[in-house]
Length: 375
Ligand code: G3I
Image 1 (cartoon, rainbow, N blue to C red):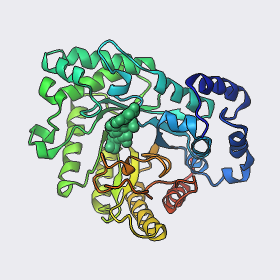
Image 2: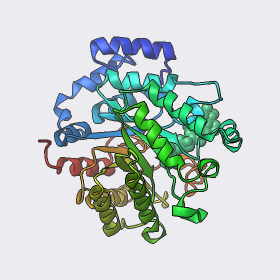
Image 3: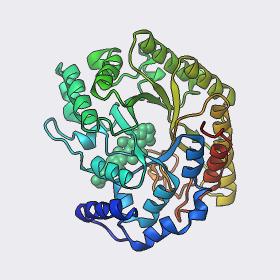
Image 4: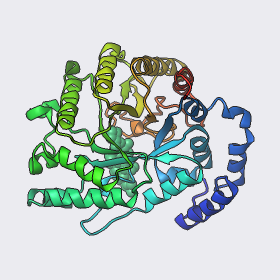
């Protein structure tokens, strides 16, 4: 793989802005431009027809080092989210240290190829450095929250489509009021940290759609979904500027999707006048031993069940998978995916290791294509 330096990558982007193709290699440019007849059958074309955004979480290094990966993203997506570049531990590694280079480069790449970018995430209990946790315990929580949101959102003011302002604030197991997660934020500032975050975000970038993002809404017999709805409703009742709910949508192949619960949740979100986004769709597996064909069939079935449950109630303006290709997925990392103890290849994304569309991807394409065309 040709490993571009940051300078080469950015220089190339300058060329690509002119030439309209990715700088990494001529073959890649040819790949992107060589199959106009395929354009109509890409995820990006289907999303465009429906007037919405389809995309994936990516790491900049993969785009820089893998022309086939970058070409697939450009061809199939019109939205991208940094998998890590806008998280606190990357963008604000020390109190007086900021690092916007990875996110800037990803935004430049997106702009050079007609993709939008969304932000993930400003307030979360993970990827949260110890120096920041210490300041929270010393009473600097609100000033730290303000400084971080104003600096990070302010840097991209008017440039990002939406932001996961607060991520995963609900965890019923922690036994806190409203089912809130016992995060450093809750401990330092109480439940109002959430309202503070959205108010600071709204005044910092009034152009961005502000999203509350969470996972496993059917968990605990649907109690988690009920807690998310109650949290969102309480924020809206206080006039907190919140515009959408992000369903992370990490599905589990062995488990049939609870269609009634998902549909009911979507109905409630829409009834509150909010948008609903699918922000991190992928399908985890337990059986790495079977042949890909049988695994792909089960994965695609879960995606079909889930998209039908959501699309029966609403049309998400943003639909993202958490990874584009199984070549790069958190589901291969045993640190995060406890069932994948040997970092086995996975099948739960729209493109495989060779950048070929999987039955997951075919199912997503069919669901997007069945949506009513944008008016
Ligand atoms: O970049 C460093 C590398 O320099 C270092 O050598 C290596 C050693 O551990 O770490 C690398 O950083 C890792 C980073 O991913 C980039 O690969 C971090 O350790 C690792 O903790 C981080 O994991 C990410 C995780 O969120 C925590 O931020 C996963 O890639 C990412 O897929 C996962 O994504 C989350 C969403 O943000 C929220 N929803 C759930 C989803 C899956 O857990």
